[in-house]
Each structure stands twice: as C-alpha cells, then as structure tokens.
View 1 (tube, one colour):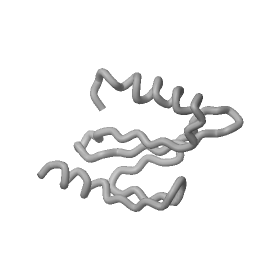
View 2 (cartoon, one colour):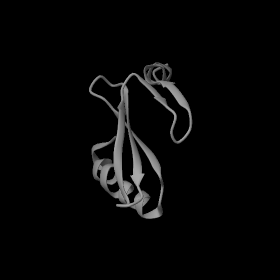
View 3 (cartoon, helix red, strand yellow):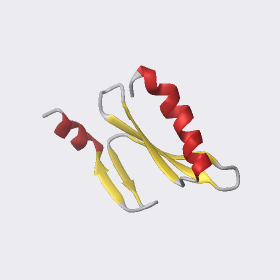
Length: 81
C-alpha cells in the first residue's frame, strides 16, 4: 500500500463498501518482510460496520465467503520473477 493510499484503503473504502452492503472484503498490504499480509473483514449487518476475522501472513485458508487456500509466500516469489 502506498503512503498516499493508506487513509483511502483503511478508512474511505471500507466505509463505502459497508454502506453498499458488501459482506466480505480483504485488504492486502506489504509486510515488513516484503511478503503480502491479507486482512480479512466481515460486515456485521446489525451495525453495518466491519469486524476483522483474520490476518494472514504465510498462508490464507478460508471457507467464507468461499473456499480459498493460498500460499502468500508463493505469490510473492512469483511476482519477483
């Protein structure tokens, strides 16, 4: 995430997604070790605000909103080629 987009990606976009009723969203950032870090959120319908449901560093294995199993380190290695 570029420094210019921090507020937009962490504040503005989630508010707009929640207002639109988007039930799930993931935010991907570059960690201190340059590897991707995925922040996973789920919309609470009562408050219309997001609840964090996970932070994934090396591997991401989820069943909601659909099954996904990703080696985040492999994504990084493939992108560096």
